[in-house]
Image (cartoon, rainbow, N blue to C red; front, side, top):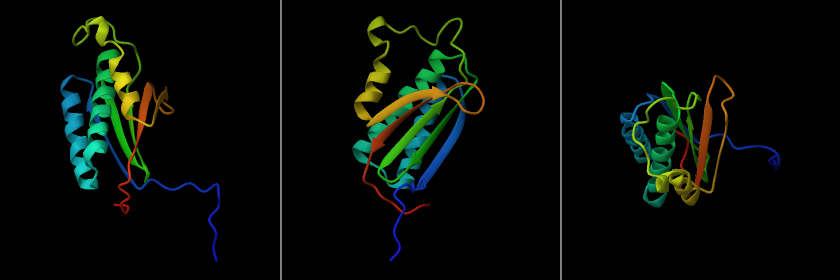
Length: 146
């Protein structure tokens, strides 16, 4: 009888990524692309709502708080966890912002991400410039690989 190695990791079940210009209109476009993919993957309900919120907040942060020309969003379904990662091109935003947030709104986006995700964090991009902010949400939609 074959045994699994305790250090073996499971491969990604499903993966989807896209790149968009770092403009305000890209937040809506990112939500639309992610929503279409979640429907294809059969992910719905609270998990879908949480993913949509996280994507919206992370893409908004990349657009508003950096001088990026593009953002990259990646979804990975690793079985019990759905991971969202958004990479910007770094560089703090210079000059006017898309809209000036009221002081009570600052930081609320990441508080929302924290509230709906099982884990989240950020790190410097390994390839290229910029920062990657990621979040994971638990789900039980265990589907076969596409």
